[in-house]
Image 1 (spheres, rainbow, N blue to C red):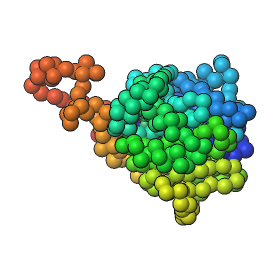
Image 2: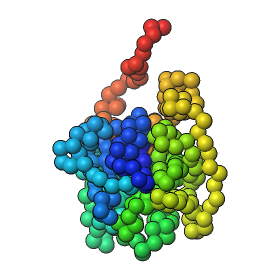
Image 3: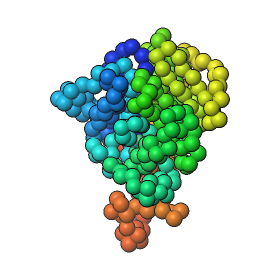
Image 4: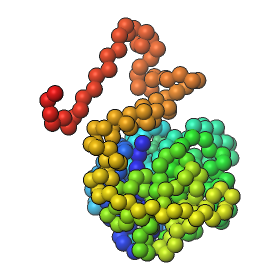
Length: 306
Ligand code: GLU
């Protein structure tokens, strides 16, 4: 899991993205990054580590200034946590943040390498960015529809095209994504708490719906480029309740998140239908030497002795 956010409006985008990401850090936290339109050019800042490491880096190397952009906190599935594997990914024309796993990334990467493309990271995410750039025909919605027909797996994507400053595009399949609607500003986020400080109104994006966010309007399309009218929802919880997603307390929420957490951890390590833990140094020979496996867990924030 990880967190993605996006903003288009009138506020300082870096401040909004960092603040919104701080509400999503529970989803993933091995790296963080943002892409901001600065004078109609996409500028990127990213760093291994926590959000605080990203802000420290920007304070040292220069803050990004603009009123629209996208952001990410990463929980690595493909490629070690590092500056180069941190999101956003992309090039001059298109830059993306991604939550999820692209199952057929290898075959797409081989195709792109075959047509002379070079990769800067080890992530599955970069194949989406490169494929968007490869198919880009001047029409972002058309290009996104074409690309998602070729990728298999789960994704929530925040996308910016250099030709379309101050516009953020988004799409999701399996991974969660909402579109927040404020007064002369719009947001995308993996979870409602990220936007609650700014607006309580949001759309729930369904599978393969494409959102196009600009300062004064937000439109949603299906993959056939037909505009969709959606019900605007209003969050009626406060921030504390929102962060617990309706559960009575955080421990209960974490218990219910376990199936997704286990799936996310194991899925990228499945080879030929079976888990392969060799990249973690656990070979079949080592496993064969075990007679028992004890699963030991600990609740770090435990405040009560049972
Ligand atoms: N699969 C992507 C990566 O490893 C995204 C992981 C995430 O959802 O944070 O970079």
